[in-house]
Image 1 (cartoon, rainbow, N blue to C red):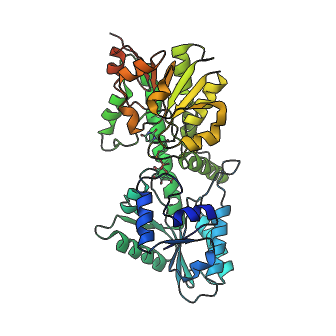
Image 2: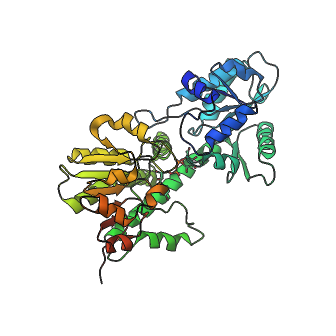
Image 3: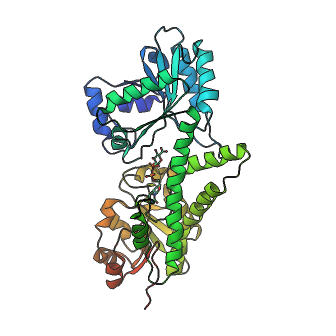
Length: 420
Ligand code: UGA
């Protein structure tokens, strides 16, 4: 295996078996494969000429109008095409990147054909093979995927890739969906849109529950999640979804739909619901403290979710910006994302070196990411450390009754007022 990337600093790190970002088990995987001599890296794409299988796994960021920017995909296809133009052996090219329907057929294939001088299906094969791995769980998801989706127009290429995965995963092989390029490409967007919809749905119910005496979204999520047609996953209400995938992919799906002269109202509503949800914690802080001017607000959790240092489109960013606009003094802590946070907020906020220190003299604490280590902070610690014990549990990690009975003003996403 050889990984090709133009970023030399990144390659240097990988050569030393250092993961370029925080991801559980990645460091160990890198160390093992490098020590076994089965993985190396290069910045020169011509080394690809000897390989049997070439993955395009580059980023597909949002353009300014929200549509997908396919520049990196195009460049990668061109580099692969050039690298195989003088070879005689068959290479299977696989599009792993998230791309809008039509990309493999109308962009990747012609670029490969022009640059290689070969015809798809003869000189090389082409498949679409979206990935579904989650940050924070990427190694496990790669080893044990729920399913494998392979799209293409060439039965032989699809079969070759299916056989590769059969060998890679062994028995039992995860279910394989064989389909067209376009369906495979759309499956990826539909998957992320559906998951984002589930979260925005439960956040909507949370907002209704917050206005309903004695209601609790956690009980509601449990109640509906046991219905097998709904399922219990992705029903954790919170401050909204973020990350490098859902926001970008939903925007791209909206733009793609509109390019087909179709208004995807449901998808737009999922995004709008999330934008509103991101403001919820500031509203709750205002409700608890009145004016936020000069108030010290502790933020526990900055990464877009636990087990990652990734802050791309993290909900903590608009949350902190909203608090700063209201004149609050923000002190923040995250077990993994402090470096990324410093690059974003610089000296506009204070950085704590541990979660309990973050609470010192705070007028309010907001839980923005549900890191495991925050779950063990007891009500007593909040009471001892904070100036005013106001806790806004944006991820519902604490027991509301326990906190309230200890004298903490406890507000939770999706928690209705107590009434008899
Ligand atoms: C997501 C998908 O889950 C992966 O299947 C997909 O491969 C990936 O995008 C991608 O397109 O590359 P990821 O962005 O790593 O993975 O994160 P998720 O675990 O899906 O969480 C996304 C956001 O939803 C996070 O901000 C998380 O806090 C939020 N979320 C998730 C909730 O608020 N509640 C939930 O119940 C679940």
